[in-house]
Length: 275
Image 1 (cartoon, rainbow, N blue to C red):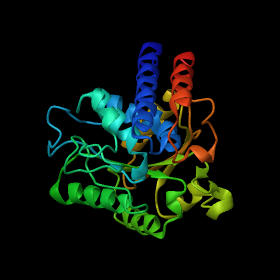
Image 2: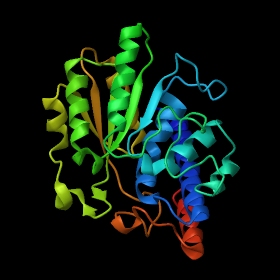
Image 3: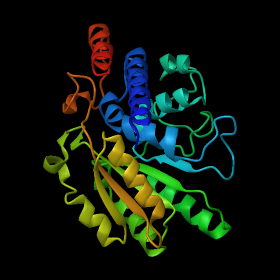
Image 4: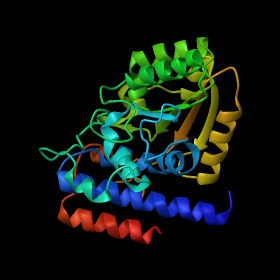
């Protein structure tokens, strides 16, 4: 990746992170930690990788994205708004009564949302169904699903993975946001899903492990996923929960808590300093 492109993506990811903390602060509730850890990969997906058109969000030939860990809706909403699906100013309505930006993604009311999600463990099954539908219909669109590393403690994830591997769904890419923290603590202490790569390999996946904040590594991983035939791909992205905000980084307490006014100002300053 050339430096100009990398700088553009880093700048865009920083704006998306600002949108995340702005939305959660305005709502006085939400999930900033995992939203911030996923921001770089979501930036790359929506600004470089996926075949999408904000002016035609229901294009039947578009690539699909399923946010299986639907509680990090602020990351998806901020990304969609910066990509042009709806005004960024609407982010301040997150979780407000009457707002279309609900606490979890809603495909019926939010432009660009391909699947309503939030019940952990279920989104990957929907993504697998989309990928299978593309194969059956002879379509070449691709399907991407983002799961949490705590979420993959759910058994339905592995049923979906087994089916995807068995059906050789090479148009499916699963991204595991491996920030090592869930609501009750570190995942290895709550109910360890480790080793994650070997588990996906056992279900017939091509597995790629990366630094989920390195755009060069992200680009290389998605290129390899696209070139892989005969099996789905799982990208295990090592990330930092709360990435970019000093007092949130690697703190499970920020899994589902909104910053107060002072913390919000600090967060925005952190994101400027990290430019």
